[in-house]
Image 1 (cartoon, helix red, strand yellow):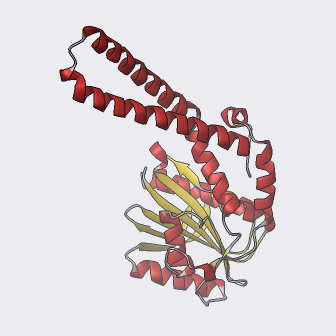
Image 2 (spheres, one colour):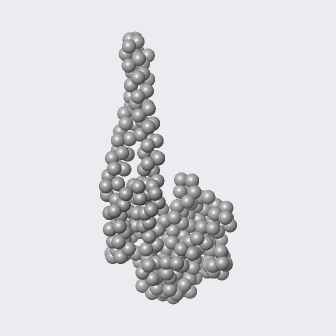
Image 3 (tube, helix red, strand yellow):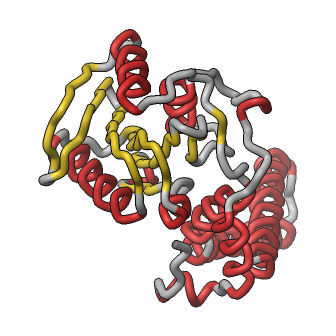
Length: 275
C-alpha cells in the first residue's frame, strides 16, 4: 500500500504544480498580451499556453480516471488501521433494554421521528429514527456476529434508498449487545458510501454494554461519527481522549499486514477484499 500511495501522491503533486503554473502563466499572459507588438513573440506565447493547457487537462483526466476512486479507498483503509480499537461510552446503563431506552429518549428529544419494533426486509429492528438526511437504526441482540451486521446493513440500505427514496444522507446502524464476536469487529470500522460523489453513507456502530465499549469508525470528523458520539456514547465531538481506548483490534494489525501486498491492479480488477 505504501508504494501505491507514494505513486498516487507524486502524480497528484505533479498535476497540481502543472495546473498552478498554467494558471499563473495564463493570467500573466492575459495581462501583458496587449503590450506585446512582436508577432513572433505572440505566436510563441500562444503555443506555450496551448501546450500548458493541454498537458494540464491530460494530467487531470489521467489522475481522476486512475487515482480518484483509489484515493478514497486508501483513505478509508488508512482510517480503519489508524483509528483506535474502540471508544468508551459515557452512558452508565449496563443492560441492553436500559441502554436502548436512553438512546431512544435522546433521539426523540433532538427532533428525530422514532419508530419501535418494525420489520424491514424480514428482519426485526428494535428502533428507527429519522430526521431530514439523518437515519438511525437500532438493533438489540445478546450476541453479535459478522453475519448479523451484514444482513442488517443490507436491510438499512434498502430501506433508505428504496423505502425512503433518499440519495443523500448519513445512516448509523447501531447494535446494542452484551457481547461481540471477534469476527464482527472486523466490520466495525467499515464505511459504505453510495450514490453520486458518495453522498449517502452507512456506518455500523457496535455497543458492548457489559464492557462499556463502542466500536465504530471514529477517526475522521464525519456526520456519522458525530451521530454515534452524540447519541450512542452521549459525548460531544471532537471526541475527548478519555473516551478513546488505547488498544488496537486484532483485525487492524491483520489489515495493515494484508495491505502490504496491495497493488493498483488488484483494485482495478476488484480482486482485493479488505474484510
